[in-house]
Length: 189
Image (tube, rainbow, N blue to C red; front, side, top):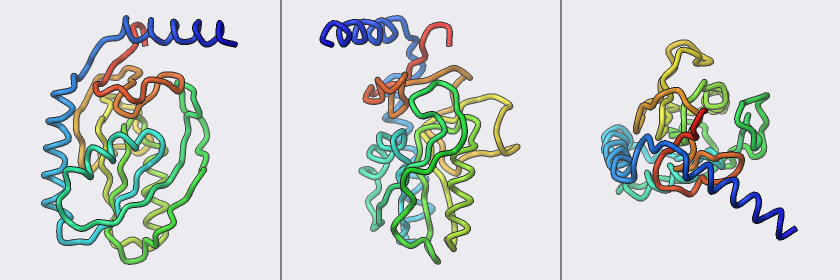
């Protein structure tokens, strides 16, 4: 077993060594500062509930909410299409929101807007639960023409990046490397 772990560690480390850095730690920090200012302008008097979309949104939510200096409530939800793969499949709900959305201003925070099918389904779910307004914030908007909903954009976006497979800042490479403080793309993907 230990030999298998070493082989896996070497493989993942090799991916990291060969990866292209698309946004360094400073660019990420600046993006979060700007997003926090925009969110504050929009929601500082709304007593919003901020929902973290697990697992990818954990990093983005943490970095964003620590910059928000106004009262808010927090909860999480878990819906995924990736399930440790590099291509999305069918939407799978693991945990639905527990805090009531009825009449609330809701901010959904996730790591990336890629095709957006997962995020669009989450936003619609919140609307159906009676939220007064539903907004979304993502660190990354991947630039391509394959959005699940034509013209879909997040209300608050940190960075726009090229259409490559990404990891770091909450996004994973086969379940690993979510913890990295910058955005990377593996060679060839």
